[in-house]
Image (cartoon, rainbow, N blue to C red; front, top):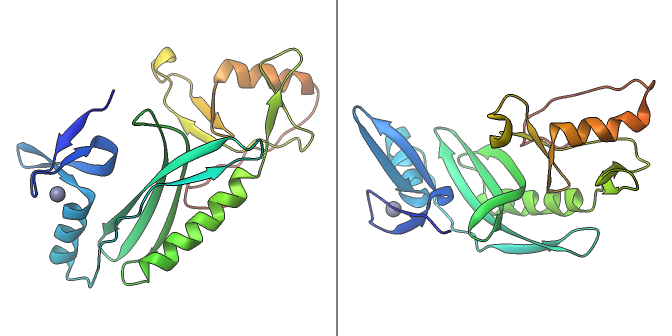
Length: 194
Ligand SMILES: [Zn+2]
C-alpha cells in the first residue's frame, strides 16, 4: 500500500521513504528530500544543488531485476546518496549508500554508487538449499544487512542477504552445516564496501 506524506514546504505528495521526518520543538514536520536539502544548504551556507535521480533497474546474478530509488541527502558539509530497492511502493530487499563531500559533483558520486551496486548484485552468498530454504555458497562467506524483525519484536534481527530476508533462525540453521568450524563476524557501515 502506498502511503504518501505531504511535504510541509512545497506540498508535494511524497512516499515516506523519499522524505525526512523530524521534530521542531513540539511539532513534527515532514519534508520531501528536495526541500530538506535546500533547507540544510541554506542553514549551513553550503553551495549545494539538489538532483533528483530517476529510478534504475539492475539485474542480479540470476537475471532477476531489482528497482532502485535514490535519495541524495545533505547533512551539513557532507552528502549521502541512499539507494533503496522498492517493491510494491515499499522499501524491501537491497539497500546501499555512499557518502561524499557536500560540494562534490553529485552526479559523479551517483555514478560511483551505481558501479558499486552492480558489483554487489553480482555477488552471491546464498543459494537454494537441499535441507534448508537457503544454504551458504561455496564462498563460505555471508554479507548482508542487519534489520529489525517484527516477528521477534526486534529481539533478534532479520538479516537481508542477497536482497532476501532471512530470519535469525534460518541463518542459524544454515550455519549448522558448518558445525565444528570457526568464523569471523565483521560489522561495518552501509556506505562501505567490504
Ligand atoms: Zn517539498
